[in-house]
Length: 280
Ligand SMILES: [Zn+2]
Ligand SMILES: [Zn+2]
Image (cartoon, rainbow, N blue to C red):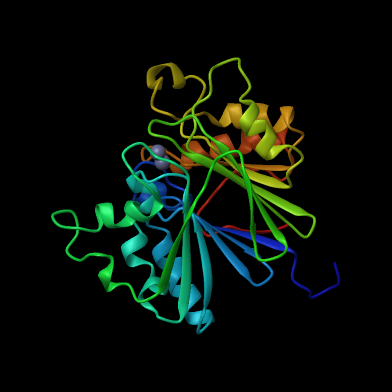
């Protein structure tokens, strides 16, 4: 890479908190906003999930450019992954195209029904009619691969989560990033769908809501552990691993301890924190 040139792919975390936002002094380092990550590949912007973190990302996108396309890839539609949508500025601009992707979910007939399903009274004061962007939808069939533009490949796999969820991987210009949350593993059994998504990947995030010690208490909740992320990284010969989807009760102090343990075992890896930007 020549000095001064931009790397092929950049990953930025705008929200790393799972389940519920977590304001407060004990949560400032990892950040309190719910799930949202931005991946930039050349001129294309891919956003993974639309938790509260997407509000500030929307402000940045509007400030940086006057028009454009945004690819919003949803893992699923639990609140912590969609609650920022009504506050995402590009949706209010007729100069933006926003394509929303999602796999099949229990209770949703199709992708197009997800946002109107919660932007309505009594849950929200206005409907999606307030949006001016050209809003389109893409049905994802987990297991299939898709293209964005001519040079980006998106791989998908089903995840083990109540009501369904989809894991994604982006391949672009020889670089790769995988977004794998929310998913539960069976102790002692390696999830082959996840391994396929993260095989030899440059970087991935993984559902580290829990610890191995806590998991038995939360069987059936659809979440995994930071230790399982490490085991998967090893099994799939993956590159950098970032623990993601922190529980709202997990303090900065606790996350620092987890970060040190991960970094010790895997170079360039650790706990994902809001505001982090990583060049691949
Ligand atoms: Zn979640
Ligand atoms: Zn969920």
